[in-house]
Amino acid sequence: MSIFTALEKRRAIRNYTDQPVEREKIEQILAAAVQAPNDKNREPWRFYVVQGDALKRYEQVATAYLEERFPTKPHLVESSLKVIKTTPTVIVVTSAIVEGDEGATKDNVFAVCAAIQSMWLAADELGLGFVWRTRGVGLVHDVRMHQFINAGEDEQVVGTIFMGYPAEDNKLGDKKRTPAEEKTVWL
Image (cartoon, rainbow, N blue to C red; front, side, top):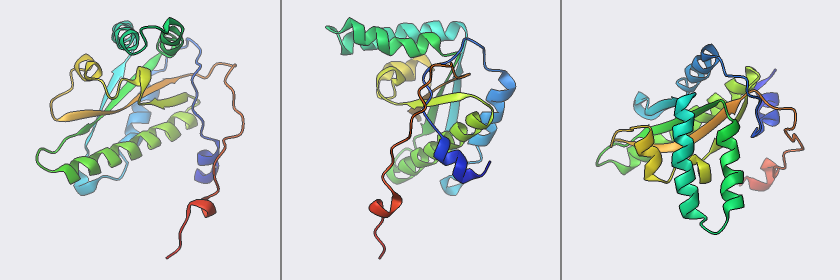
C-alpha cells in the first residue's frame, strides 16, 4: 500500500478484541517510532509499555483522576474507563525536557509526535487498531501518569496510546477533512 493510501485510511480505533498484542509486533512498532526525524538527533522519546497487571494499576489511577474530574457524572467516568478495561496494550510516550532550553524541549515534543504518527502507521500495517489519547483517560496533563510510569523529572508525557486487534464494531465512516487547498497559503 502506498503511504498516501495509508494516511487516508488511518483511523482512531477504540474497540478491541481481548487478543493480546504480541511482543514482536510491539517491538516492530517501537522500531518504526525511533526512525522519526528529531532535532540534533537527540532521540527524545521513551516508551512505557503497559500490559497485564500493570493495566489494572493504570485503571485505578485513571479511576481516581476521572472521579475527581467528574464527581457528579459517574456514567462519564464509567464510559471513559471502558477503553482501559478493554485494551490489551497501552504505551505511554514521553519526551525529554532540556533544562534551560525551552526551544529544544518543544522541538523534542514535535519529534515525539512524529514518532507517534510512525507508530500509528506501523500498527495499521500490522493489523492493529490504535488511538492516541491526551486528555481524559490519557492522563497526559496529570502528574499521576508521570508517577505511575515512574518517569524522570526530565520527561514529559506526550501521549497515551491504546492499541489492540480491532473489534468488529468499530465504526469506519468517512474521515472528514478539510481539503489542503483550503488550509494553504502560497507566498
